[in-house]
Image (cartoon, rainbow, N blue to C red):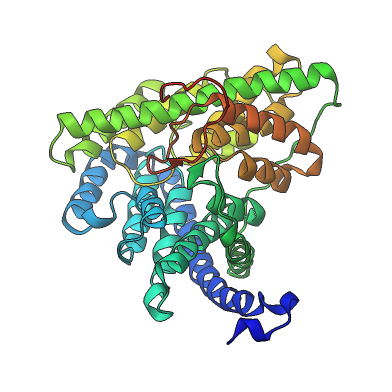
Length: 415
């Protein structure tokens, strides 16, 4: 179609129609895959809780998944970072095997008791499935970038039930300080439709109740910003220690399947020593508790340690739900210190630690509004932006690039 023959207001029409079709297909694939994943994850979690002895098989499960990835999944082992790299520098279509491998690996991790999340799995499935449409539609490299971003948005949206945050995550996660607005329409279409596809399959997302808030006063705003600083440091610490342990294990243990075997032994022994399964799996029940009553002040630290060991030694999953746990329990612990309601600070920690660790303050702010209501908006924006500002330039995604420094002033060494 000759665009110049159309009236100026209608010239975006072919673009919109094209991406409506492609993004809807991406959403159908990603939303359906996320539904299958969430149902599998729920079954795995119930099975583990009913049979606690499965934890002692975690080392063998880790070895098995590591062996499978070593022999069939080397090309997709980078996970989310592979998708981000392909968006920045398109080279070749992401192998379809990424989707079933990460689905299998994550479900096994949860079945036997690793402390991992789920967003990484949904994002990788969404990106891998979306990229298969590259050949179907014979897309140019520039369009393929947008296709992958739509897949990331659809995966994030459908696994958490937050379509607006999912769309923004796909746009924001690629580079610190920069967003690609040429992909905004496909990302929003894919995220919104993928969420609806999941709901049609019968997916039910956890409902978090923030029963108490606070008025906007000078002290409240100052306290929220102070909490945001702490949340940012927590996110930075999580990202750095996870990367450091991963690098250490790769240097010290040459045979990849042995890394999760060792990690599984450490996690199983740590659970036995603690006498509690509180810090493994997703930990959704503990996150819900953080909105209901004061918790032990060390919950956030214990979850962080278990998750760093699990991810740093090679178990498959994601970082985001553990970050929600860390943030909610850290906010719960800060509430009496800052004299704010613990449900409010639990909600702010839930999104702000993630904002700092992933360098996605806008997606995190919108997620807070989608999960907890519009009233939290001003507080969430402050907490997430301050967390982002103080979390350094190294996040949980190593392929994320620095588009623009977080503050102006004298040039600083990389954080």
